[in-house]
Image 1 (cartoon, one colour):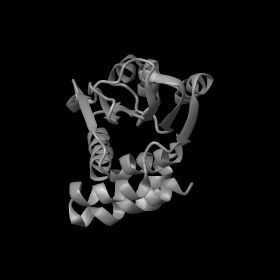
Image 2 (cartoon, rainbow, N blue to C red; image 1 turned 90 degrees about the horizontal axis):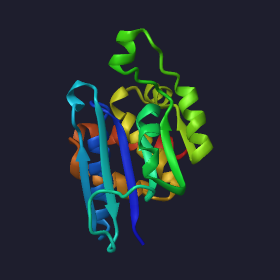
Image 3 (cartoon, rainbow, N blue to C red; image 1 turned 90 degrees about the vertical axis):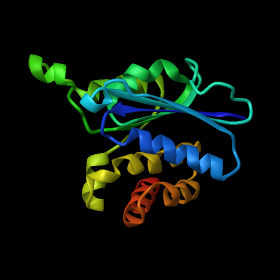
Length: 189
């Protein structure tokens, strides 16, 4: 049985590392993984989307429309934009923190994340995560990605212990404990 995980956000939020941690966790547990990132204008705050597909019956790194088991969204607008990838009955894990697009800021318009979250709730099971509060409690905004991955453990599509093992291989030793605390904190909420 395959697992399809779509991770989306904007440049600089840690989406690519999150995808690498999930992929490494699956590989370390003996599973087959295919993944791909579409980063485009990420360095300028643009969209970042990572596809992670796990399973023996997966032959392409890109998740087909309506096939993602989970969308892990670092920002609500990106979750809405990528919602067509979610399968019926799928789960969206979404950060409550709003990232205003540059175009909206320049035009004086305001994006309302609660409207987007309400829209998501009409179409999927939603786990809304107060990433800002979690990062404040943990003492670092650099672990927002691991806060979201910890919350994804509630969906059953990723495993906290496997994520922690993958972190040992992917992050500098001085950042390991903080990242583990972030996973533990949010998976326990």
